[in-house]
Structures are given as C-alpha cells and as structure tokens.
Length: 341
Image (cartoon, rainbow, N blue to C red; front, side, top):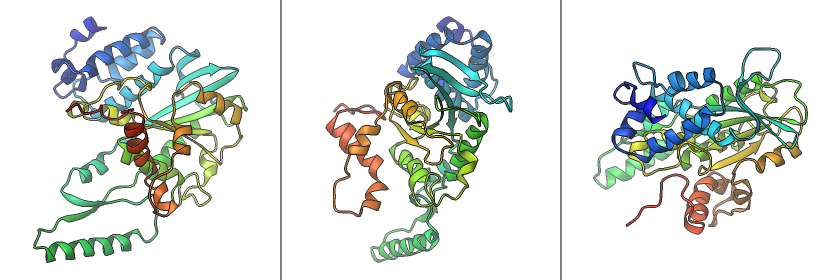
C-alpha cells in the first residue's frame, strides 16, 4: 500500500502526510494495518475506508472524521482474523443501519459499533489558561460548588498578590454517550438471542478522560445507575460498553510519544456491562473477555491508596490504576511511551 499512498496528493495538515514526512512510526504502523485489513474486507468497503473514512481522497482534511475512521480501522485490524468476521453488517431487520464489526466465537456472535466523540467544545476550554472544573457524574449543586471554590481560589491569589485567572467548566460528554447508546440500540436487533452480544466501543482520550466516561455510566445519575438521567429502555439492546483510549492514540499524535495506534493490542480497554440490557448474556460476555485484551479483572481488584472516602476513590480509580498499577508496578505504558532519560 506504500505505492498507492505515494501517488496521493494529500492536503496540508493530514495526519498521514505529517507522519510520513517526519518518518514517524505512526505512518509505518498505518501501512501495516491497512495492508492487513485490505485482505479481509470487500473492495467496496476498502474503497470507502481509504477514500472517505481515512480522508485520503478528500481535498480538505477533516480531523474529526479522520480520527473516527482511524479508530474504526484499529478495531477492524484487531478483529479481522476472527471467524465470521465482516464489516458494515446489518443486524436489525427493521432498518438498513449497519454495525462496524461482526465476528463469531464459540457459537456466539458479536456485533460491535465504534463511536468516537468530537471533543471540540471541551478542547477549546482545555486549551485556555484557566482553572477548569468538572464533576464525576451529575451533581445538582455543581454551580454552587464551583462558585465557592472559585471565590476561595481568587481570594487566595489576591492575598498572595498573584494575577487572577478565569474559571471554566469543562463540558460534560454524558449527553454524547446517551446519543451513542441510543444510536447503537437502534442498530442492534430487538430480538437478539442470548448467543448474540451487542457491544458499543467508545474511543476516549487520556486517563482523566477515561475516568470521566466511567463517571457518565456509573457516577451520580449515570446512565448505568438506577437514577439515570435517561430512560434505560432507550438503550437496552446494548449489552456491553467498552471504553478504550484509541482517541488519545490518534489525536495530535505528532505531539506525543506514542506507538501502536492502529490496533487494540496496546490500549487500555475497560468493559462495563449494561445492568439494564434486555437479556442477560453472561456466558457470551465471559467468552468475549477471551477474544479481546482487557484490564477488567485488574482494575476490579485494584485498591486506590489513601484514606479518602470510597466515593472519592472511585472518582479517581482509573487515573490511579494507570499510574500506580500499570505504569509503576507493571511497567505497561498504554498511553505515552516511557520516557528515557
């Protein structure tokens, strides 16, 4: 595929143009991934992937669309050798919508829908010089709490003779997650049996971002709690949600020290069962754990150190798990590579 790529005239700013010109491993890994996937999907599906999803035949580069396509390619690359593998599978006879990946294992069928949020509004705030606030889940009195904290910080800065900064609230993405769940629900079959497992895979950012997405599901008024801000019936066809840091592996890759962006072999993968799914499928979900690398067992056993209340520990568990367990204890760096002094 290198020859085909070399014939392209990509617009400035295209990630793969940047990667190739800078001899970044990101480009070599892309070529390896796309060459492999080409063998397992139809010419029509590959053309759509190459031309549109990866933005290789577009006159103007759309970063968000590219990252979504790149994440889909990484997922396809991981599962393409599985039995019964196919892409763009129509699994709901009531509509013409399709899911991104389907495969079979031990008499179970797995349907996987891949979603990647557009973090545009949040990133605008993150890139400002301000004090930033965000809650774990939904809090009714968050505005009052922010006001108390911001006033206290300002008062302290004034006493120290330091300049004040703006106070900003990072946009919650829980409504995005709700939309992802409902969209996936509509694609999956309302009558799927116990041997058909429907999975929503969400591509997240850094470890702090992954913690927030866990909160959208399990925090106060989370979508997988008994006080969900949305009726769970609207997404009960979804059996399992997988959170992975694939978005981080692609977004502004050239500013990071990363590798293995084009598969799921070296990503942080955490799965959360939908407690409100229409039909319990424990055997199929257990079998899936053997088909995809995940850290469910490790994070469930991990204890956040310190004397803080358990609720506060839960709100920081993913972050501590990555730093204290994966990186320090196990030497696994699933975000940025270990720095070499």
